[in-house]
Image 1 (cartoon, rainbow, N blue to C red):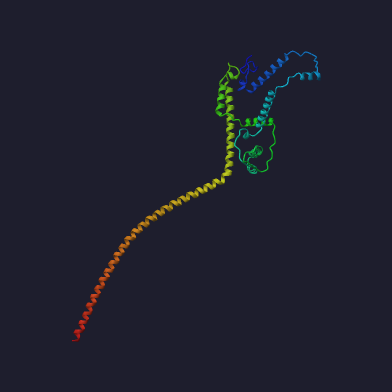
Image 2: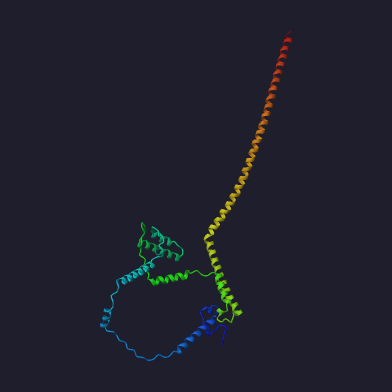
Length: 333
């Protein structure tokens, strides 16, 4: 009996047909494979009972065969030695740092204590370990492969030699951790292309059930929602951390902003007052000049009237004196 999921592995599977299969389909598929392997092993013929005899060659025969070997060519031996030496040099180069392998520029002055102290000042323990190891590697390269005019400060401790297998495993771990993840649009396009292609779902004559399609969409939605919630929680924690570290700066910025606004208002008021006083000074200067002219005219008029009065007084006195003189004369006669 044929099923939509081909649970008994009737078709050849290249691995892509199980991309959207359910866990039950995967278990049925594995069980069918085990049964197939067991039945194939059971159908093999039983081994026959045979007796084997081993003969060890004599040492004399081996010595005779070695004597019959032709003498190795010197050119072939030199070529093999050159290849061995080149392989050893390539292996030794691979054991060096990436800076030495790629012939990148290196500093002439290497201050190991300063680099180690800066590494100790980092807050992240992982970054501290990486910075310390980088400082030791830089100092090791400067000690083993010094540049012309280079100088190394501090006591250099040789870096322990790591075997090739451990280095290869470390490189694989780094590549697996640093490999760039596919974008959301790539994942979405791949998911849609696989879900729409019935051939990838094991049998070409069967399509996805609507319930399974909705379940897959629900699972993808839940995964995206969990990722969004995790990002939101991480963002909230980061916001609280930044508020804790930058709260004082924010208060200081607000206080300085208020003081700056107050100073700007006071400056504007002072400018307006200065403009008013300048206008008043100009008006006062004009008024003072006009009042001085008026006062000068009044003083001139008073002086003129005073002179006229003095002249009138002088004339009256002269007349009075003349009359008095004439009266005395007449009285005497």
